Image 1 (tube, rainbow, N blue to C red):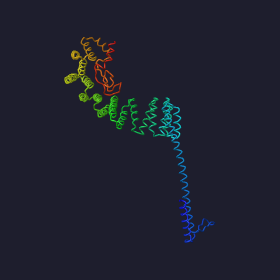
Image 2: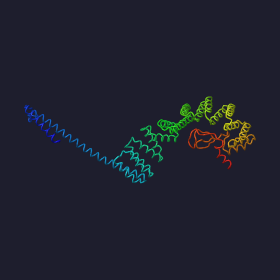
Image 3: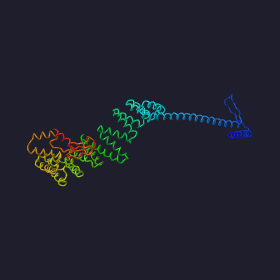
Image 4: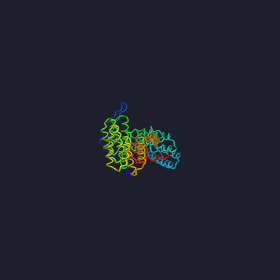
Length: 447
């Protein structure tokens, strides 16, 4: 059918040519140069141009078809190679899972020859060396792969992990920073870099990273934990500023802590401390007294108030405060123990004995009140040497600091601290006269 149509088309063209040729007998003279002059009928010139165009069109069509055929051939070849590469990679991963690192490496290397920029294959090849405990070889593979895939966060994260595992924290940190340059919200890089900053006590940088983590977190449970951690990091930043003498910056950072979590008692303590160092004793006392009524276990705040009133030669004010608080909370044993301790600090020995004996009669026979009562008896009998030996054996200072215990991990200490040395939790210590000194009691009995 196609041939018939083409034949009809040719006949029509020829018929048209002869018709126009008979109707247009004129000629055109072409002078190429003096030796070459041509006289052609107008219709012949017209049809030569037409046929030249047809020939060019046919040649162009043939060229396009040839290029298309070559492209399809190349595409089929590449497709076949890619399929073979994927198959080798799949077999390589299976071998890696089975523990055959050598076989896995050979297969993955064959796969990479076809796809040299595939970050997944590069990471898997490096993993074969990691499984053999060869971190340097793994890093070499990863770094070489990164040169060809400079925007691959996956390779950078693999470099960070491998560097950290081999002890090169500097390179790990640099890799994580590069990840964040490419992807500022990358959760793994943010959390891992934050942990490195915490380890190096770079609290402000860790806090800034934690803010970004908190902004991106969607899970409510994780968000609460992240907010709690941010509070601690901001607090440590404020502590560092205070230690460096940057008191105004410390105050601003403490206020940021309280804005994030106003139930964080260490921040109230630190704010008062900084105000006191600045000479603003009145406002420091106001901060601590205001905070005291917010917290159920406010002993650290009361102890701060006790210290500052004694330092300001106003022990009567703290004595009166203790009495008011005990009158309002008569069953609070901790307050009564702290009052007894204050009596001893002020050498009001008889008052201390009276209060401690009353506690003993009420059944309060734990270790700490017994220690206080023992010291009071020694002082009344003027047994200075015995008191000295007693204090030395117990390892207590002259002011008999009350014990505190971590509510998270039960780690005990003789002084209140904002953060537990054992579990790392902030704001977790509570005063406890028995549990905190249990181990110390056993040591004394043994001696």
